[in-house]
Each structure stands twice: as C-alpha cells, then as structure tokens.
Amino acid sequence: MSASPPRPRPLNAHHHRGVALMLVSAAAFTANILLIRALGQFHAVNVWLISSARFIVGLAIIYALYRREFAPRHLFIKPKLIGRGLIGGLGVYGTYLTVVELGAGRAILIGNTYVVFAALMAAVWLGEKLRPAFAVGAVITLAGLALLTNVFAPGVHPGVYELVAVGVALASAYVVVTIRQLHHTEHTSTIFGAQCVYGLLICAIPAALHPESIPPVGWAILLLASITAGIGQITMTRAFRDLPAGEGSFWQMLVPPGVALGGWLFFAEHFSPAEFAGAALILVGTAWSAIRR
Image (cartoon, rainbow, N blue to C red; front, side, top):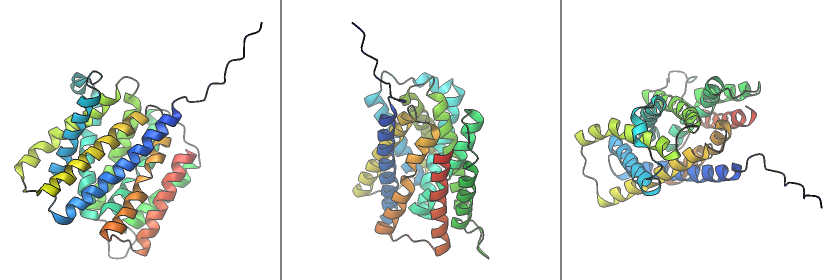
C-alpha cells in the first residue's frame, strides 16, 4: 500500500496573515492621523501631550495582551532596541507635528517617501536585492517630493516643516528595516515597547512643562487616536515578521491616499496643480519601487 503524496506547502504559510494585519494597520493609522487632525480643529494642539498619550496607551496594550512575552529589560541593554525606540519616538512626534502644521494629506504624502529609503537601507543592511527597475520608481518618487514641497516653484522654498517631514520619512525607513532585523531575536511586544518607552522618555517632560486645559470631547478624541495608533503600530510590527520590508511598505501606502481623501472631505485641505501632480508621482513612484524592487 503506497503512501499518499504529501500536500504541496505554500510558499509562505503566514503570508495571508501578514497581509491582513498590514491592512488593519493601514486602516488604524489612517484613522489616527485624521483624529489628530480633528483634534487640532477646535483646540490648540500640544504635540508633546498627543505623543505621550500614544505611548502610554501603547504600553497599556502591551501589558494587556503580551505581559508574559514582553521583555522590558532588553530595552536598556540591546543597542538595536534602543535605536528603534529613540528614532521611532522622535518619528512619532515629528509625524504629529507635521500633520498639525502642514495638514494631514501633505504631511503623510511626504512621509510616504520612506518606502524608497527603506528599500535602500534594506539592501545595505539586510542584503535584500534591488532590481534595476527600482531606480525608476525612486526617481519618480523624488520628483514628486520636489513638486509637493515646491522645490521648483519660483520664489518659494521648502519650509522647516517640509524638512521635518522628510526627516520623518528617513526615521520611518530606519524603523521598518530595524523591525525586520529585530524579529529574529525579539518578540513583537518588545519591539513595539521600545518605541513606547523611549518615546515617553522624550515627550513626557515637555508635555508636563506645557500643560493645557482640554475639554472632555478633546480627551475622548485623544484617547481614541491613541488606541488606533497602538493598534496600527502593533499589527504593523507583527506583520513585518511575515512580510518582506518592501511588501509591507507597499500595503502601508494605502495610508496616504486615505488620509488625503479624509483631509479633503472633512477639513477642506487642497493641493495646487503642481502639488497634486507631486502627490500622484509619490504614490506611483513608491508603489513601483515596492513592487519592482
């Protein structure tokens, strides 16, 4: 009696789970940015406080779901976790600062150029191969960035917050690649916890030094925004265990058009023709880079 042939094994048994988690993450991050934008509509926004609230809620989520797996001691002895925490914490603050100052759509579109930077970093640090076609997407993305930030506009130059947004993109690229490296040795909760702990160390004191009176509705929006951020971050971190950096970044590209659409619908944000062309080029270029790398 002959044995039945083995069933073919899928190329990646966890790929579908990674994609599903990344879609949840993209939806949560979109909601988070629009909620922060809404908070700024009726009250002066303390970005230090918003960032601190996100980190506190993130730690609460970790202790609620991953108390046994979380290894807080590693956060202070592992250099990559320290770097992930410091750069990630500064990136969160920079993201919220640019959302408030530039508008949700513009800030997130500029930040989305991290896809190109992450691919370059992954090639150097992780040995992930880049196809020649990737260069086409990178050039398209950078051209879009130049248009969106008015580099070519006569008499107009990128402002400080546009430069901060580019810095956020570089920070995000570093975080994405570092997460991929850390997944070989650390649990998702510890990787996420690094951002929460070091982000709180960065933002808590400035938040306390600049207290503001926030109405109950504002606190409710802030809490909801922090919860969506926590969900987005932990699902994204877990998804990168199952997905390559390029593919994970590709699914995160759903966030910029969602935020831009929400900014237009709810907050009357708009782009000039040149800026709109730049936004379109960024989306096309980053999508091409992620797919063709």
